Image 1 (cartoon, helix red, strand yellow):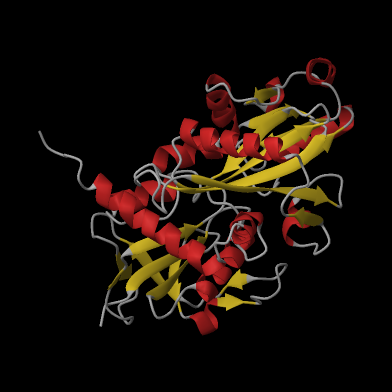
Image 2 (cartoon, rainbow, N blue to C red):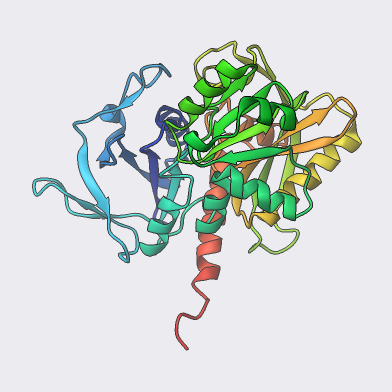
Length: 372
């Protein structure tokens, strides 16, 4: 009998998107083909402690997105660099070490989606799902991402960067440059955490203060009036053209928020916070253009595996690239898997493909010379 592929599902993390990651991981674990995979649940708590647990006791209040949390009593473990995926227990009373064949790092935001964990996994010499170190880092940093997209000829909105709250430009100056309202957000964060919509001077200073709680660099962006559209990308540049793992873009979906904008609560807490319309009701030529732009974003940022590219469609028909998420929300109701489901790829099959792509990339990179 063929041995099962050992998959480490890595999730949680030191991020304001910790709870989102727990929800994504639970969905992935439930959908894994247990005849094909042996799954290890590896959680990272908010202090950075790694722990390995059993399905039955690993998550508490798993069905409540407001209360979901890791079980603190789980066994502490560590991933040992250059050990081919060996997970080492930190307790002398625990089982012997385990080894994983591939890691699915379902981590959103800093310390997970920003290249930090990707670098650790490369040092540990183990395949992993999603973007590599460079792509994860530059895609997470919205300032660097936007500059690369701009240099790559992609249409983006106007923005300014603030690195020190005491040296921020005045509200009058920035509103004259970018107009009103404005959006203020941490450069390295996702899921709309720390994001504020600003209409006046009082809002402006409060929003800057809030955004600097999450990052040392903050973006001020122009407000773009338009429909919010999203497109999923799947595949690898390592795959042969025309194969099932070659790069492809899904159809286009639309987010219709019930709130002032697509906030964290609208995404993950409020069941009526937004509507997902798949496929988006837009002209076919617009859909095709968005799909082409999504693949170009993927290429410019050197991404691999998966990504969800977000756009604005303005009233005049022009399209603006907002951002890319290299590890988008992965619950069953998240836009990324829902778009592929509409394209005929089930949630379980999507997970299969991502794991296969991770192993394919790893095998190709192992062919590279490391000595003269």
